Structures are given as structure tokens and as C-alpha cells.
Amino acid sequence: MNQDTICAIATAQGGAIGSIRVSGPQAIRITSHIFTPARSGEKLEDQAPYTLTFGRIYDGEEIVDEVLVSLFRAPRSYTGEDSTEITCHGSSYILQQVMQLLIKNGCRTAQPGEFTQRAFLNGKMDLSQAEAVADLIASTSAATHRLAISQMRGGFSRELAELRGQLLNFTSMIELELDFSEEDVEFADRNELFQLANNIERVISRLVNSFSVGNAIKNGVPVAIIGETNAGKSTLLNVLLNEEKAIVSDIHGTTRDVIEDTINIGGITFRFIDTAGIRDTNDTIENLGIERTFQKIEQAEIILWVIDSREVEKQIQQLSSKILPLVEDKQLILILNKTDLLSTEQEKELLFILTDLINKDNIQYISISAKQRTHTEHLQKMLVEAAHLPTVTQNDVIVTNVRHYEALTKALEAIHRVQQGLDMHISGDFLSQDIRETIFHLSDIVGEVTNDQVLGNIFENFCIGK
Picture 1 (cartoon, rainbow, N blue to C red):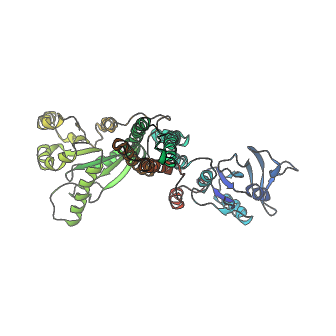
Picture 2: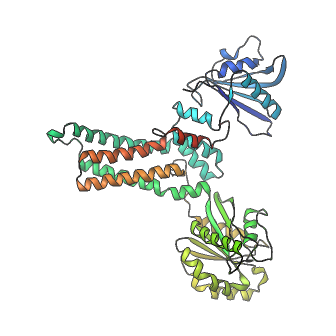
């Protein structure tokens, strides 16, 4: 158990109110040493837990600020330790003065995520719930918020605990058989174990498969904006992001590297990737950018192929053989840009040229003018539909964490070996080993077997004060 008492500013600078958190065995004593309640004769140590006490922070005889102090006693606190929270005015000077006084009286500055790490170590939450705290802080949409709340409430953990419990029961029965190997007895019903293994395989497969949706919800649906040089890709990116993110120029080859940014449309986060224009060139740097364009096409789920509507036939002929084979399993939206420069008759002629393409199930088209912002709102609606993301509730269990996905993938491989072993009627000691490995990887997710290095990597990415 860590005996240090830690403190940290828990609020962002610039607000009217600031908050400082203190946690550890000496949290109440140290806070009391610099805090004097407004009511004469009161002491902070004598206050009941979950109460607010009004008073002043003193530096010697000098008043630093009038504050409210919240008091929590172990084990019924966020960290499971004695804790206080000092709410003062949001001045950075005041916050730093209070921090210096706490450190002078025995605290040390908390590391990123150390409050949540202590909550995990003290059994207030498992590791997957602790990771959900960081996801909740970082949530940027209704969907990411709901998934983080679900995981923090333990929905994911409960599902894993049920699987582990069923597997533990069977492996203990199999290992008991090994103690009576000379009697040739069988305590674990192999038919029942076969059904259990099949059920667990289905559950783990569902969780593994949910990662593609969870990753898109958490990090944004990747959308690659591609096309020839000067087709209007950068202008479109700026319109979608509603800011001048990319340089717009009539000069061909202006964008030589990928430019990425995210925006929320209809409750879904999209990660837009503006790529280098595809053309034949002798420029070495531009060619490197074009190579990255094709890499981004493979990584994206939605492709926006921007075409200068005045050169539709030419651009489709030149790029179809390069692009279409890469997007067979993706959603492709053909964007006929610069239609403000065409007559109505010319626009109609474009449909005839595009007939073969737009009859495919995964390809849609839209005519816009990115510069004039014509029909760009309709394009946003098409993006939401193309994302195919389900409506998420707080009861849904969807994997969003790469570490969880990797552990589940390894658990799935192990349970597959259990199924194969049962089919081949292998001995109980080999079955038990594969069952134990499945349990190990499931336990790794909630932190029952995680080593200190993994914990350090997880919590160092938290913000200070949480």
C-alpha cells in the first residue's frame, strides 16, 4: 500500500472555480494544518464524512483564500483512502499557493492518473473500469460517452466475470480428475464442457467483432478524400471542418502529404483524411504523398472521390483501374465538384457517363460546389448513412480499447484450442492448460494478472488530477 499523500489541481485553468484533490493516509491532517473552519472551535478532523466545511486557507498569518473543503474517509472515497477536495477561486496564483502549502506540509504532487490508479489498487474498480474513466473524460460524442459510462458501470466486467467463473468451475473439475488418474474417473462432463466452450466462443467472437464498431465510435470513422490534383479536395475538407485546415491553391500538387482532422456530424465522429492528388509526376516528394494516398484508401471505411465535374470522363478513365479494386468492401461516394461552373444540360450528361458506376451497391454520388457550399449539408447526411454505426445505449457491451481487443483475440485462440481438443478427445491435462490460458487472457482485461509495466503505460496517459 502506498503511504504517500498526494495532491493535484483537478480543474482546467481559466475557470471561476478551481479544485485541488488530496488523497492518502495524511490527507485530512495535512489539509487541516492549512485550513481554518469559519465556525470558531471547529476542526476539520472532527467533521463527518461527505460534508462541506467553509473556511480559509492560511499561509502563516496571511489569508490565501476563502474555500470549501469536502471530506471523505477511507474506504468510502474515490481512491479508497482518506481524501479531501479544496474548492477555491480559480486564480492560477491561488491554486499554486495552495498546492505549495500542501507540499510544504507533507504532500507530493500526484502523477498522471494516480488517483484512479489508487482506486484500482484499492479495489474500488477493476482495470477496465479505470480505463473507462479516461475514455469518459475524452468522450466527444453521445456514443463515446454512453460506451464509457457502460464500461465504467461494470457492464463489460460482469460479462467477462461470468465467462471466467464458468471456465474456472470446469478446469477445477478436470484438474480433480488428474488427482485420480489411476482410477480413470471423469468428473467434468465433456458434452457439457463442449456446449460451454461453444457458448464462450460465440460471446468472445461477438466482443472481438464489436471492436471495428467500437474503434470507429471512439476514434472516428476514417474517411479518405481522394482524387486528382486540383479537383477541390482541400476546399471540401475545409468546408466539412468549417475551418481553413488545408491550403487551397490553383497550383497542382499543393497537398503533398495527408492532412487529418475530426468532426462530429449527427452524433458520429468522422476522421477526415485529405490526401495528395493522384497524378503522374516526376516530383519525388509528391510521389511519396501519392503512395500514402493509396495506403489511406486501404485504411479508410468511407472514400470520398472528388472529381472536377468539367473533367468527369477523363478523371474516371484515368483513376478507375487504380481506385475501384481498393474500395470493393468500402463505401464510396463520388463527389462531382464545381457544378456551379456547369449548365443544367451538362449536369444531366454527367449521369449518363456515371451510369455503370452508380448502379453498384457500395457507390453513391452527389453533385456539389465545395467553394459555394452547395449541397454540402446533404453530403453530411450521406456520410452518416454510409457509416452504418448502430445506435449505442449504456447497456451495450462494445469493445473500444486496443488492449482489450488483443487480450480477447488471444482468449479466442485459446478457446478454439479447447474446442479442437474436445473434438480430438485429448487428455484432461492439455484441456486444462488451454482453459487456463483462456481465463488468463480474460483476467488480463480487468487487471487480475496485469504487470506493473502495463499499469504504468495505462495510467501515464491520464490527465493529472484524475
